[in-house]
Length: 187
Image (cartoon, rainbow, N blue to C red; front, side):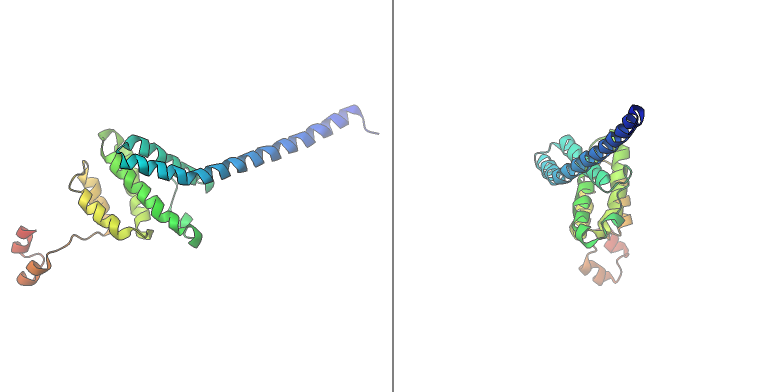
């Protein structure tokens, strides 16, 4: 026989365990739901980019990045390429690189987003070398410099990514140096 007090304590302990399991299951289901929604967030962000609805695109891109942080259980802003070195995850490196590139261009459009722009550029410096779109990205960075509102940050990005400016082969060959005064004037 068990006293009423012991029985009440025993049942409350069991119900607490059941509550904890239910919370963990709900949390796991929520994470799975977020994981499934990540692709739609990218698609919606790209549609907003196509229609020049940049602030909406930024919101969806930021949500996508937040989902990755929650799924991989890392702190805010803690995404690094190391997380994606697993072969199954490597395709995400390209997606993340394009997200940070789009965010950099969006945040460059207004002076009030300077800190976000700097964070996006820092992430591009981390992710771009591992991305399969490295070559097109390098061209995009060089072309974007012509219209950037914060060209210094994009020049820094260009330098840190090791993007070399194209030289005129004919002029360089004719004057035997890419640093010849005539070549520099032509450039």
